[in-house]
Image (tube, rainbow, N blue to C red; front, top):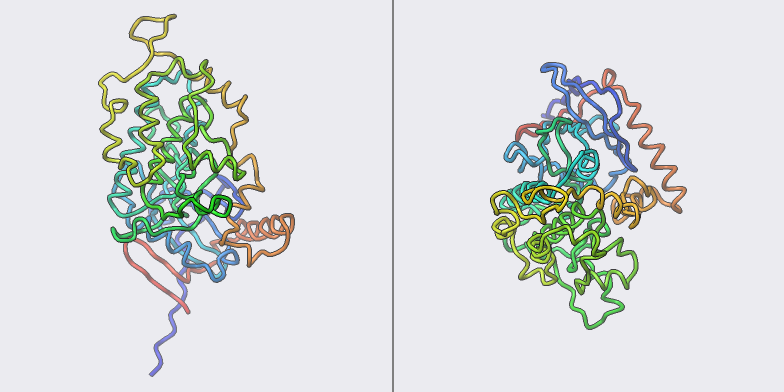
Length: 384
């Protein structure tokens, strides 16, 4: 006797204003009808995922594993699918991204930077302790939950993350991440054709330590130590760990302890790069009152305000931000996510992607039914 056909369920959410729009998804405010709670809902057109459904399911599984376990890791509250779209409901983070938030402040000192970095590494330790590697840590993926002064920073966007057991921790070899934050072990695979004597290695959680070391450098002076690393020559500099604390104007107001911390994170050999737990014991993060260079214009106990130099450094270095370069953002996801389903040259891919995101944006949940639902450890398929 054949199993009875399952009926689709009415959707318990309604979407509202658009919070953001990317190359392959739109994020909208969503309200849960029964509770009245508001969420940020990431909507992905299923056309992007043809043959690659496992990539989104991987992100969902990671977030199911991590959600509700740490205050500084974004929470996935719900996941469901309609016939046309995939919906992921997250915390409604309205406080802005890390750098945007810092640059809106009236003052930002080295102890402030150390406090932020310590919080981020606390979240990374939790992520790694749960056998997850983020693989795309950057300021854009560090969000504040509210605009308030006491807002909580959260690590977000686990789209490139991996769940790994101990035996797998250094078996990953695919190229991933964002230029400027990618660890040397990732680039070794890419430049091996021009450096045949350079061994190709796998990667694991140590890559997140490197990326966060770059973030620490960035929030202190407004630019990254490795630029974009878009050529083999620049990638080779990353592989060799060639960077400097320059210009001196920006670094003279920063303590030697902070510089040592960055060196502590940016160790080229990922096999001896410290763990998140070890990093959390560094003097820069543990000194009571914080480490800093005293501002001669203030009292001996007053640190420099780093914001003027950081803003100037960001402007002079033409700091790269994904939102300012749609082509790089699109190209980043074409390996291997959508190039086969989009096809054509860049302009064709961009036009097609925009059309599909428009379709997702217009779906009315009043008229849509849920065909797959996963929440709080339950997996409910409600139609074939």
